[in-house]
Length: 198
View 1 (cartoon, helix red, strand yellow):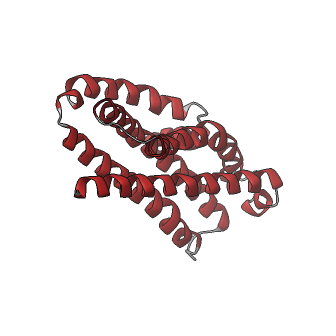
View 2 (view 1 turned 120 degrees about the vertical axis):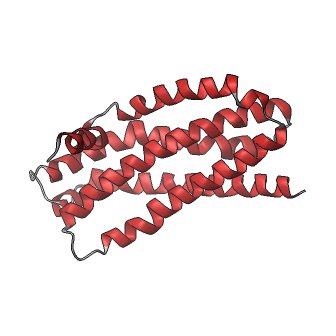
């Protein structure tokens, strides 16, 4: 195993502070964009970015979580343990990509609300996905990854893990929150799409 793949493995599966390590520099970069770029854009440009960003996040979550995962779970060339570890990597990576894009969208949405009156329901469907991603990254992924790491190290098998009630319950809650996040993104995308078509 190369040094680079070991570092990525440790970051994606073993580092409990990985979410914070993505959020902190992402917020710093976004604050620069906030001052230097977004504040000079028109309201329509902000609305177009909100539509594109929301639809992009929706596509990312639906494709990687709801379309690719079942395909990977049915690959005959992978063992059950390999599938679980691969899904652990992917879940962590999707969460970090979603956090970064969510930060940018949330900042632009804040600037948009300073110029346009936005109903509370739209604010809710814009804020909920990033809040869910942070909750998943801080509360659900660290214990999930600790257990997946044990499978990766050969200490237990994926079959043993699926017999653990707490693991199954966390998995179900994670997927349920993912469904709520995708629904909010779909509603927000429709709202901005309808607004721009007027």
